[in-house]
Amino acid sequence: QKEVEQNSGPLSVPEGAIASLNCTYSDRVSQSFFWYRQYSGKSPELIMSIYSNGDKEDGRFTAQLNKASQYVSLLIRDSQPSDSATYLCAVNPGSAGGTSYGKLTFGQGTILTVHP
Amino acid sequence: EPEVTQTPSHQVTQMGQEVILRCVPISNHLYFYWYRQILGQKVEFLVSFYNNEISEKSEIFDDQFSVERPDGSNFTLKIRSTKLEDSAMYFCASSVGTDTQYFGPGTRLTVL
Image (cartoon, rainbow over all chains, first blue to last red; front, side):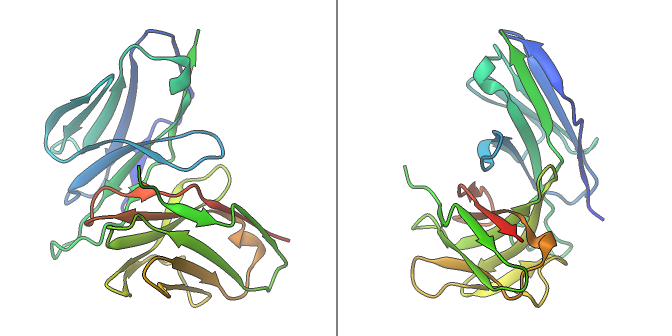
């Protein structure tokens, strides 16, 4: 069973602080990694994608990938109350034959609360 | 900005009835997906669809489920005989390639 694990939280940070969200995955052949944000009762909204080891920055968000450790993280700098949501880590597992049809496996999500 | 749309936003049905959930993917996207999320649980993959056929499906996607692209814009999920445990949010997603997926707003299905 290919799994994606996240700390369920809740994670509470003060406004302006850095929020750090973590995710591990079990399938070593995974190729693509995504962070989605989900507000209560809403659909997943893409924040970032990352494919190569290292860091990728987009505004206040930085995704970090370490394939050797099977670990991906998301840092949110200068956290705002509007960042309060559930953050979903999603992995495209790929397949043994190298063909991927795009199936995403999601973690259970980390609930983030940013308090003023 | 183009987006995935879904109808209806909320569907209430009786156990054993058939339901059809509708999606309009982003117009230049080629890959289409259905996911579901039972309240308080993970988002789960159901099926992917490319070139007018199913490319992958999960063990959840049994004979009660089917998908169709009846015309150039709509993508539908049919549940033939609904069960109580089918109650969930159903999300449609689409992508250009087998990569970044954009999700629709979802249909909340309630089976009574």
